[in-house]
Image 1: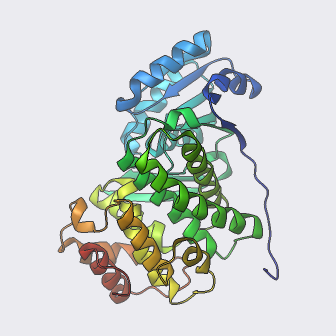
Image 2: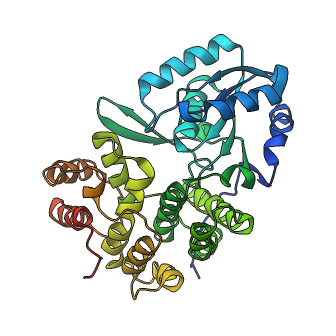
Length: 354
């Protein structure tokens, strides 16, 4: 039990189930809008076009240019298209790239957001916006970044490839991991994190065996909602800092970067707060939180090393220097030497504690 805590309440409306994409018009009108712009990546443009057709006159246009890490130059083009369309809200259909673009438009224009996530990565419930400019990724938090409504549709995840199912789930688990030791954690968030880890531990192996397992997809999407809520309502620390370093400065793939770093950042902080991270050991086994997450990652085919995603060993010094450039709260003190050791282990893919 926590001696004291503050629970701020959950402000985003959530619509969860199967076939819930059919409720987009209802949710947009509930927010008081009659013109929206539909957002997606180029890869999901066909899905965006089908959604726009289903919305009829409510759809004022489509911007299918969302890309990873929310580059400012892409946002500027999207804002121009949004203002020219006459829309007053955005509907973001896709993963973290599209959600990020919707947030970037909203914070610049005051637009309301309806988000329809199609992966488990989990930025949709948050007041966090990470943007990339001049080779670095910066992050900010603000109430006007948080989406008004999130629609979770299990049917949209049935076609999620196994590889992306795995890495986006590991990305989501990272949110829950850091929430367990966040200084502003509360019992509601901690319970959601524990539940999410158990659900992912059971659900992801089932989805590897049968990606069309609807019950397992529902379980995984529920876990993703729990983890996204954790990310959106408490502070993140070392893990997310390092993920932003590699994504913003080395252009590594978002979900894979989180998945690779997760066992190592967990093991790093586990030496300082083993009791707070014990729910991970209970869920995943392995004798330690970091080791258990590494074992799970290996068992589900998640990438295990920074080397595997194109990072050179010579890049690690620069990454460590960027990671310690600005001070931030973390359970264990951060210094260049210890971070460099963490990154070396992650580059090699060694099991924590081995």
